[in-house]
Image (cartoon, rainbow, N blue to C red; front, top):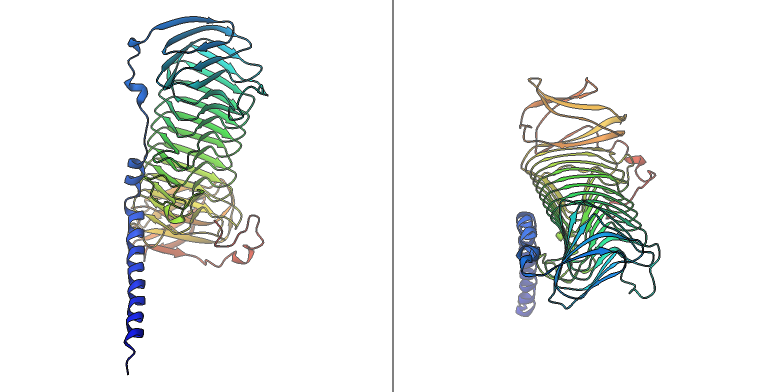
Length: 485
């Protein structure tokens, strides 16, 4: 006799499994197909400074000689030198304040050089050369949250064609507790901790930046407000030497253009989601070069909402274009979730120890465009993925190749398909380009000498023995298990 109750329960259980599988497939496709669009539309940029008609406000000229306090809206044109004091802005929440720094020097032996306690918008315009410096210790009258040579609790925008030479002896250089924006100007910042820190956002429209910091170079920290916690770079020339991350965003990092040269960092670029559309980027990192990961709140996984979306499936690195070079001692290009190479040129000189890889993805890597060359150790080596739409290769060399070895790949007609001179020793190469063709034969040359020929037979064609050097992996410096992220 058939037990109808058990049969129904059994059918319901299988139905639940099928529903979960369908949902998982939909989520996976959504993450891989719409990430870039969601990321760019999900951030909220503040362009309130562009809507202010400063002709409506009175202009006040002041030559600095002592602490200057601003209590109302207006344009304040400063000249002169202040050897021990600051500019203080403490207005109502609707006030619009513009500071014109015209070849000024401001030094404070007890706190920040400029501090804004309250205003709606604060704009700082630079004329000529301006020198600002705070003290190594702050007076106890300041809140413990005040940690920047320039510190603002309101939206803060920089503009003008002048220069700001800023020395932050206490902690941070420029701190915006709301949105922080740079339209233009030249900035030389040396900071005991972070050089530039905007809580809600850091938005760089243009400008020249030379940042030296013991902490992060550029940082955004908001993890709770919808559309915030991002760094957006539209253009500019940015040089960073950082003791920690060069550019760090808690939620999203978007680079649309510009020249970014990171000469020193722990991690070069880090955010939960990273999108690079264009730009010339060079990164040197003692750990990971580019890392999509992190987050502290997994309660909400929508990148356009208030949650920190820290699930690994929501950590996505997408490269649409640009010229990118990464030299990393840890993972070269790393994501806790997905890596998408859709365009541009990416060259990676990865780690020499078997505990890291030139490429590292928690879920998957795929290449749909552009050129990728990734050299490094073989212990944790990953390919450009069987789900890619263009052909790629994974080469395990029979022995470790020396630094300064030139790798050249030519097709059967002798045309050079790709070339790279590795700066460090390596025994693995992952490479992909639209010039690879199914059924075509290619030859690898090392320093001009033929190493091996191969034929493209699959989306990922493996050359050599993947087990070479595996026995050394667990004893290698920096070694780690496969499930470590």
